[in-house]
Length: 417
Image (cartoon, rainbow, N blue to C red; front, top):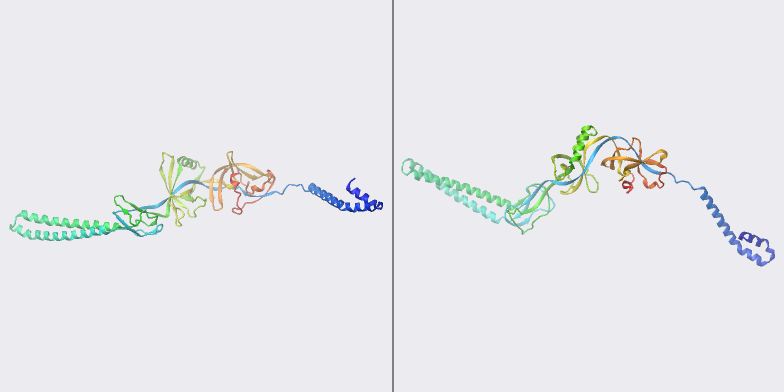
């Protein structure tokens, strides 16, 4: 007999004795608990039966495709080179007495850098000065003798030969004076070379010798290196085939020249950030490297803040041509795979639809990195840019909302799905 019916029967036959009344009182709490459990189960079943709907459409950020002129950027690897470089080397032999600069500091042209022991060269200078004085004294005597012999030779008091000898002695003394003056000049140069100065202005690196080191003019011992980096060169290469294809597209009218901006370059660092000030393209080499098939290009870039260092690896973004009508899409909106490039657009019924696209190149600006889409989209198509992680059910409708650059961080996996 069910528990409920048993309890009712026990309550109805309470007149049969105290034992039955006690049994009814014992089972009453159990009946109440079972009834409550059955009522709860029934309520849950009703809730399950009435609330089994689909979740609301997921909100996704969309960007409306628009045709616009797009400058085609070419991103190439480059190396930074100092605009001017000077190796400070020893020009006399001797022992280094002092280092007169702070390593890594800015120096001016003519600023003292090292002091090499000048004592031997100072002594040589004084010796040359003494030799000059002696030569000048000999010159004075020889010139006077030649002057006295001239009227005697005219009066036939001395032979012509004796007169010519005195004139030659005077000229020889003049030559000795000139040689002594040259020796003094050479000695002064050596004394000056013992005081090593900066040949150019720029930033000086570490000292390559220390006090007490013996340096040699014959070996041209290097003492330090000075580099001018307030403005630097960036050398980079481009495939000769790319250059030819670009020229052919320009000739056919598929692309047009980027105008004055064609000579402008942008520099991107390893972390992806771009320098605020652009550089300018100086020249394109006239020959192709036979070993690599590359053409050398050089740009000059302002570097007043010292962000670029000689030898540093950078990425050079060069606008060489312009696409008359292209579409820019944030890179996280494009799925790249071996099968091709594709995007998701909002189709009929607000359902996401895949669309294959043709990507031309990359562009970067303050809002982020973009792909240039050449084909596959029409003006007005709503391309899904973010919110991919919210689309749990494939093919389910979504709620498109305008995408705002930098409003929210794009999913890390969006660009590499």
